Image (cartoon, rainbow, N blue to C red):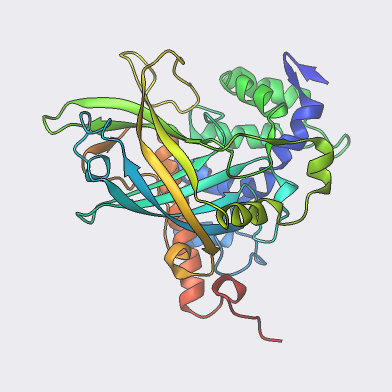
Amino acid sequence: MKIGEIDLKRSWPALAGIGAIVAVLATAFAWAAGLLGQRVTNTTFLEDIPHDFPAGYRRAHGKGVCYEGVFRASGAAAKYSDARVFAQPETRAIGRFSIGNMSPYAADNSTSTVSMAMMLTADNGQQWRMKMNNEPYFATRDAPGFLAMVKATAPDPATGEPDPQHVEAFLKDYPEARKYLAADAVKPWASSFAGATFHAIHAYFLVAQDGQRQAMRWSLRPHAAFAAWSAEERASASHDALFKDVAQRLAKAPLHWDMVMQLAAPGDPVDDPSQPWPETRPQLVAGTLEVQRVFDQTDGVCRDINFDPTLIPAGMALSNDPVLATRAGIYAHSYNARLHEIGYGKATDAVGKKAAP
């Protein structure tokens, strides 16, 4: 069953990979956009999380592993920004690899989305926090559009697949999502974190000492070659295949990603994360991330970090991307909820303890 170039039968399994996260995020998107009539309070949002959600875990991308490493600046971005991370030779990096499934107990072959979070702390104490996925752009121009996509692509109980009429109605309102759905249907499944490219889908501004601003988007491009799972390999993959793979690789040598910045030209859509810029735009390599070791996410060094992508150092500025603003609210909800659970002793395996019998 097709709508234009979108094969719904092939698209649905890929979309189902993000379905577990959507139940939580959809309410947050609706809250941030004012779609629920009266804006809900923080307490109301937290009540919408499944009551049996494991205490102390992130509400999205619950399964992950932390890493330590170093970011080595190339100096190429220093002409555009006076942020210390682009000038000092090395900056400590703390981060997290995760998969796009809400459950911390999910199998690694349950979703095609792999993610990386990172916090860089410069020698002046300023931090740059970021969250990236292996998606080059967002599905819709705003958060309400994503909520509409979730509803439109929900499976019809009678067929187990999305209703084509619902999808077509959604695409009439959000035509930019057509390319996302078509690409998602044929998206290769990464067989390793090491070879994945991680994208910061939002635009930011580099701000120079004289106040000049340059819009840019960045991605982390791996030194390791990308290798996709075949359908057979994915079906037979072990429960923790991706996380075992990255640990085994790091036992032999560090892993590296280049931070590649794409510079916008006048007229490029800065506030719309669904619109990629032309590939002909100039690029620069701002530096290289070296991941040196991974460790369990029960360790508070990574566990207790809110990887809010709106937390940036001086020398950078946020765009007016509405999805970026919405993500900040979602991350705050998740962060506050899990720290509350940890602080009041409700968390068990999330902090490395066994549940009471």
